[in-house]
Length: 172
Image (cartoon, rainbow, N blue to C red; front, side):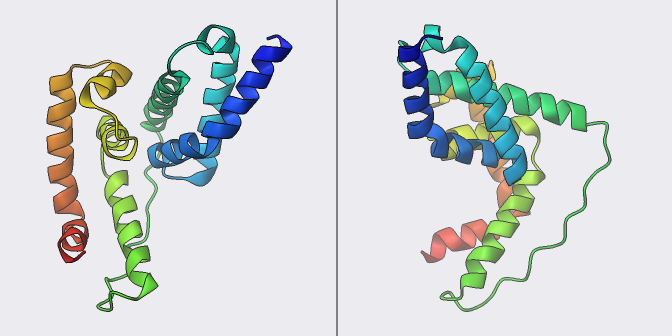
């Protein structure tokens, strides 16, 4: 990579690192794993930067790397023991209590851990990254219909496993 390309790559990473880290964190569920995932994705991007820097969106390429790399991790973990997590604290009645937000985040995190890797990826890409169904389908290498059906099934599953989410939506 020449000096100009290296400077552009550093500028890109500086500008997009926070957003890409949040996406990696949502995919992994753990800060340290997200840091490793993002580092791997950026290293792979650096190897192709000279070709991708002139493209419309290197973000799409990085998201695809993040997803595919995380799927590889999930596949390797399939043969490991399951990790048990403590139940989240009960929901507080006081809406001004900061513990309510914490309990909701813990409940949501637990519900997301219960999803399949593909369901989690669809939810992250559709609702966190706010990508259109066609782009999600391209990233996940599936059809738009599959994205729609996965989204529908996953939201239904989240409503059952984390009913606090629908209560929060109605009260705010």
